[in-house]
Image 1 (spheres, rainbow, N blue to C red):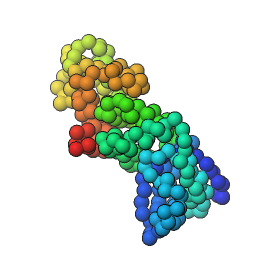
Image 2 (spheres, helix red, strand yellow; image 1 turned 60 degrees about the vertical axis):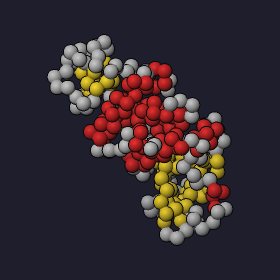
Image 3 (cartoon, rainbow, N blue to C red; image 1 turned 90 degrees about the vertical axis):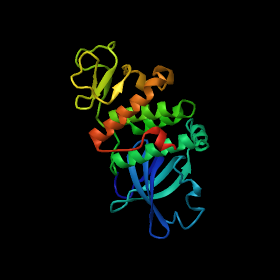
Image 4 (cartoon, helix red, strand yellow; image 1 turned 30 degrees about the horizontal axis):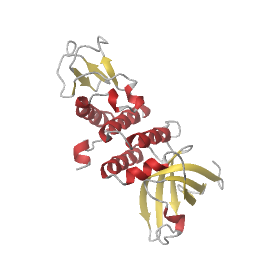
Length: 245
């Protein structure tokens, strides 16, 4: 992008900060440009400015101009009418799903620096996850999202088999963050508090099919993923039941 260029892109708002008395600094995850941080002049001073579209659960078509300094300028923002839009409307009407999706946006805003994320396919991941959480169990889709986001950030957890003997049939399994995977009941040396009743085939993390993972394992998987974020990235956040309490 060159100084003065006018850029069009689809976007989801992931962070908003008040700037001065009338302006906002907005962080978007875009389809083609990764994370883009823009200044929206007058966004607080007029209800007509940007048509009231600057909401966290709107799929947007944004237009911005490449400017001098750290922040580009938001010129226009409209609702984008696509297949995902009805899902966003339904999510807005459900408290639990809204809280979870906003936690995804907050996590992305924390992990992806300004101007970063172009090559991580985060926008398609959010699109898939937003469509899936509309009708599936929120906790399951939340865990699928966390696992896939961690993979895109370069931390590949193999929860499909034992790291030592590659067996899938010696439960329970014990998670070892140092190795990025599981030790089966026969191969573990020191029991871990992060226990999994059964391994999870890798393809189950891309299917968005809640029937692929037994409900009994969801809480175990949650603790493993939260521990992984803390171990690899230093991020500590609430488990599902506290997040939506």
